[in-house]
Image 1 (cartoon, helix red, strand yellow):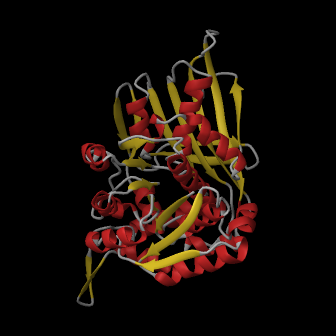
Image 2 (cartoon, rainbow, N blue to C red; image 1 turned 90 degrees about the vertical axis):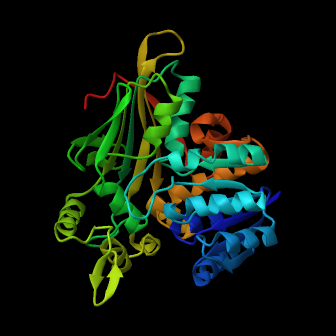
Image 3 (tube, one colour; image 1 turned 120 degrees about the horizontal axis):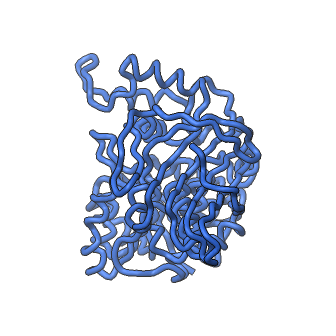
Length: 403
């Protein structure tokens, strides 16, 4: 049983904290902090009502390292779970080092002034965490996170090598809004509008954003258009699967979403550089995020399912030649809301964050330094997915993907 501090109070945090409270044998004390304490209090009230467990709440600016360090030292957690914005990864890691506490997050660091997703900033902390005898686990969400564990489970149990890997992220949910994002609007739009990159023959190949579209029939969802884009797990997968010849990431978007986003881009509302308005500097994308529906409010109206997984082709472990496997999870928006008060996009990230924390707190995953999910034994994580609301399935396909 262990004490944990969660930072951030959005939908993902809400799911994670609810699921921690449902596993009191692992999480004996849950502490929750964010810039807005009222959001923490709302999550704590929901957790109390649903589980009977008490969550202690705090107000903190995660970018203020001395103040955050003091808070961590006062609480004395065994682990800090960072579910704040990716811009805040480095200051939170600094505070963990200063306080002598292990660290976990769900998304890699990115600077505020550039839509650039790279692990280099966090990988640079390797020596500092190792010398301190601490562990930092990066990217324990669904993608990144589960998608990387899926790949390594296939590598352990089905495939000797992975030659080609495609990650398919489909949200078949309908929230009834004209335009809304299913997770933080600022992060979502920065990801989608950034140039696409995929791994091919030992290097990343860059193409224009949303330039490649493919139709795919997803189980429990149906046919959807998916677009090739860049996602951070491609970088770590290329590092930890040295035999990988091609790695790609795909995400589905409806025609209405694409139309709205195109208009917003054309009028400059997705810009991340400051503009002067009535004598004050504002960032258009941050203003847009402020007026769009909050992802955590979409739960009551969202219906449908998500389907997220990997298709991997490589040399079979049993020596039977080349094989292709599809490993995936299907999550229902209404079921996720009934359990935690949040829709499936938050659920599919918040549950793996809890499981990653459980892996560290129970000692199933341990080490000194900075680690990605690919470096850990996939089996205990995969077992918890099945018992904690994200059951997975795997099937063999007739051959490699033809797109």
